[in-house]
Length: 177
Image (cartoon, rainbow, N blue to C red; front, side, top):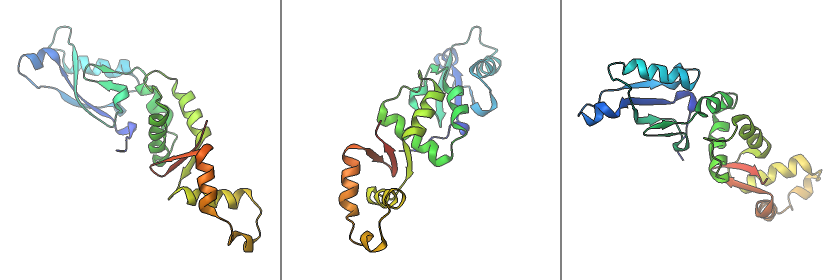
């Protein structure tokens, strides 16, 4: 999975009129320069002020999940989501999009703060593998004497944990909701 960094999102904005007339004229706009969609759309109108009633065409984009953009549409939720995930670390942001994919969350429609809250409830961290997570659970939750830890079957414990209570993708561990 390619890492998406919403704070570095950019869009190449042209118009259908220019495109249909054989021109690819447009410009890359960094969405970090705009506080909301209205401000972004105003910049698009200013860029293409020579078109009467321009129909914008987002010909290319970077660092924006496909659920938030298409050739002729940018989700109203983009700026809300961008601002909400800024408090997450880069690793957590990557895990957030893995989590969204797993849950089939419609990030273009759902409330950003609710999504972040649900993600934070389920996200456990980044681990080498399931057994690595099992080691941490044993250390944190069980008061085993050192000699018992040498006999403990971490592999079987991990298998049991991930059968029903947890899931892992791309090294990120999540608690099942």
